Image (cartoon, rainbow, N blue to C red; front, top):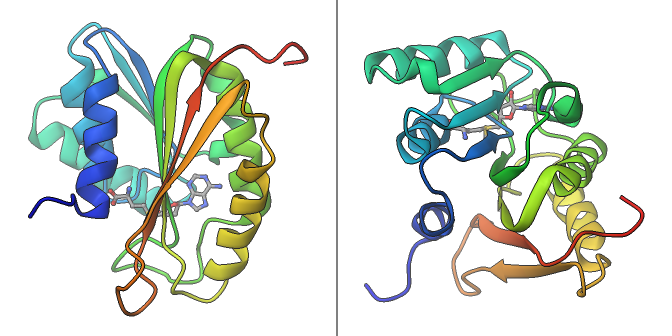
Length: 192
Ligand SMILES: C[S@@+](CC[C@H](N)C(=O)[O-])C[C@H]1O[C@@H](n2cnc3c(N)ncnc32)[C@H](O)[C@@H]1O
């Protein structure tokens, strides 16, 4: 397979950008797959900040980290990602979002457009020049299309001098396949 699958592509972007010692954010910890992946990339000198509004997700993420002996590399917070600037006070190299609901859990607890956009805006302020925000957009569930459209509207109007915005999507897959939006910070915005 030459074209990378969406999740592979998202992880590749993170892998290409994150070095040992970096500070990174998992904005939607869920079952902790991305938190673990990030913890493996940042090494013992780095730090992952992981956010989730569900205690169940925080516990699952901590358990996954413990299973791999990497719990010391991550701070897993039972908080909304929109509050990121209250907890992260260092320049961030990369952040990942998986929008939607926690697989195998309550499908009514989903990421929401306003808080997602607030979190993206806040992480853009914390992001280093050259840093990345990767969004994996699931939109097949109730509420998913509204969030998809609002997030696309928001990122599409970001000035290209300061942020490059990419969409990576398969156009002929059935059943609302997820796709990636990646934001690369090019320059500090003067009013941020
Ligand atoms: C698609 S799941 C994440 C999957 C996860 N990356 C994994 O590896 O399992 C989305 C998660 O976002 C969480 N969530 C919803 N609103 C949130 C918010 N405002 N801040 C942080 N997490 C939120 C949900 O509780 C859910 O666990």
